[in-house]
Length: 502
Image 1 (tube, helix red, strand yellow):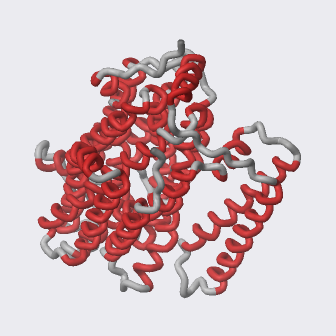
Image 2 (image 1 turned 90 degrees about the vertical axis):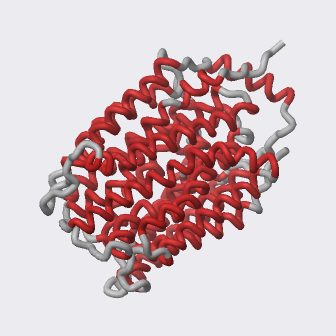
Image 3 (image 1 turned 45 degrees about the vertical axis):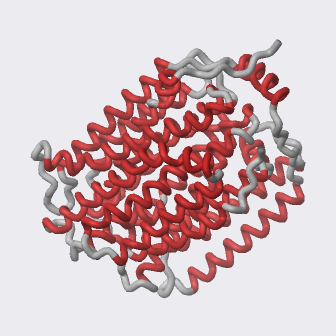
């Protein structure tokens, strides 16, 4: 008789998720300090979005590719672990180089490399939980990941402040130079990233493809959920979709070109994205017409249009949830330093005190997420997944909007409490739903595709936030957080539309 996947002990789950501690060190240092590095190297806040767009575009490309490859990999390191290890080596190197960037565009290039490397390590970790844990323990696995995300982000976000206040390392540098407090923070982060991921690689062994297939067959016999089969997309459907997206993108491109003096150049990113997705569908149409559908590109594109219903509905929630997060990562530093500390001069003490306080705020919301990860399961048991997620997203939306009304920066800690609950929920609830509705042989690629709906709103934010701030909100970057708060409130409402299978 076939056996279902065995339950793992607490410490086994701890070991398999420990690598996320290092991954989050990389992400937190990136999110909290890259805008500061860009500004130190001469970037104006209005150009931050276009510099930051490298990160989401990298994730959009890398994650489904790595997901597809890891679904079809098996060697002496396993299925997912080779990608953990090689991504960690590259990301650690990028973290050492980034704060020593000699020019702004060198730093932008390093952001691209660093984000790509982090994504190579991170993407398989989501599928790893589905591979290693039975359905009843998957929520525990994602909660453990959220715990390590919170711990890593708290420490990493606060590192520049700690370097200055605990180790007396200077947080001020001459124009065009990154402060030593930031440099040493990145050195520490690169080291911790590699060691944490290596711990998971060494301490956790993966199931072979044959073993996973046997577990899948046994689970199918007792499962109450059979996802509907979605028919493959035809060549004609790809052609029509590609035509629509390409035409819309070209029209937008023409409007921007004709009105370039009135519109923001970052809108070119949005137009380019629409055209690129149209071209991908043209390629898909050709491949289906010629029956060349066994390659990775065709399979990823086909899976995108064959998503399970719950995943489609969650995609809308993700879109409105991640737009405000990208706004926060780009504009909190410039928003708080200008709105609460009254300066945009990066060489002043007030600016650097404000930038250090932003690091504490980033640490705060990540610290709250640790507590929230413990509280959320109790809320779910009392209500359900949808209502719990809606409540947390509403708290996050209120937290973002309050940045405009709170005048004393010390009280912004309270705003970040709401953001922390939203962050913990975003990192756990959608994945808990997905893991039980996705086929195990496509767990990696679908987790990568799900990242599209994290990345698309970030690209949109990079395209329009600079325009809105400069043209509508009188060059006040604090309003990026207000816009983000409204978006998160919409996400909370849209959560109620998600139909979760019993």
